[in-house]
Length: 349
Image (cartoon, rainbow, N blue to C red):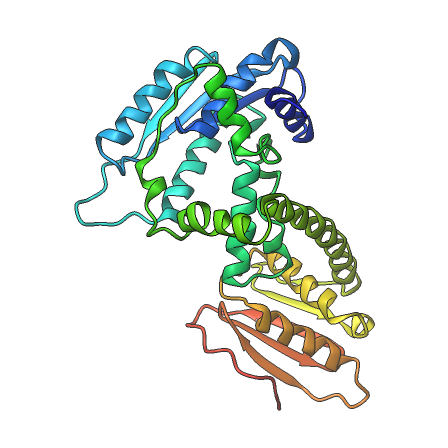
C-alpha cells in the first residue's frame, strides 16, 4: 500500500505542479492542511517547490480563531520560506456571517496572496473523505451530473493562478497516521463537531452508519462514482461545445442578448441540448443559481420545436430576468434589467 508521502507526490503530479513551481499552501491549522504542509516539506528535496504558507483568520471564533492564526504563523515558518497571515474585520455583534461569504473572502485572500508572491498554484487540503462527503451531500440535496462529480481536482482562480487539491485521493486516516507518527501537532476547530451543520452530520453520523450497516467501502464507492461521472461529464461538455458552435451564437455587445440558429441541432438528444445551454450561460456569465433542471429542459424543448414542420412562435420567462423566444429555427435570449417574473410554461403567440 502506498505511503502518505507517496500519495502526496502522486497528488502533486496529478495537479500538474512541477519542480521550481511556486505554490501557496492554504493552511487553516487543522489536521488536513497541516498534513499537506508538513508532508510537502518532507518531500521538498525531491519536488523542489517554492512554498509559501497562507492563513486567513475569519475572526468567527474569538480567541480560538486568533490562536489558529498564531499557530500557523509559528509552525508555518518551519515549513515554508514565508508565512502570510491576514485577518478579517471583527464581525458586528449579532450579525451572522454566512459560510458562502466566508469562503469567498478566504479564496479572494488566497488569490491575492498568490498573485503578490508570484505563485502559479494555490493548494488546499481537501481529502478523499471530503470528496465522498460532498458527493453524498449533493445526492441528498438533489443534483445533476455535475454535482455527482464532487470537488474538482483543479480550477482557475485568476489568470495565471490555479487552485489545486493534491490530497483529493488520499483518505483522512492516512494523513492522521502521518501526523501521529511524526508527532506533528495541529489545531482543532470546535465547530467541526457541531451536528447542527448538515456537513458535520454527514461526516459524523450518516457516513459511519452507511459503512456499518450497508457498505464498509462506502467512501471508495462514492469516489468511484465521482470519477466515472467526471469522465461522462467531460464527454457531455465536448458535445455541448460542438452543439453551441453549430448554432453560430450572435451575441450583443453588452452581453445581454444572444441569438442562436438551432435548426441544425434540433434532433440532438435532449440531455445534450440542456448541457449546451448550461455552457452558453457560463460563456455569457449569466447567473445560474436559480436555473434548475426544469428551466434547462424548457430551453431544450424550444430547440426541439424549432425542428418541427409546423412552426409556431413560443416565448418563456426564465430565472435571472431572461426571456427566451423561439421563432422558426431561431432562439433568441434576452437578459433584461427589470425584476424577474416567475417562469411560465411555453405558450404560442
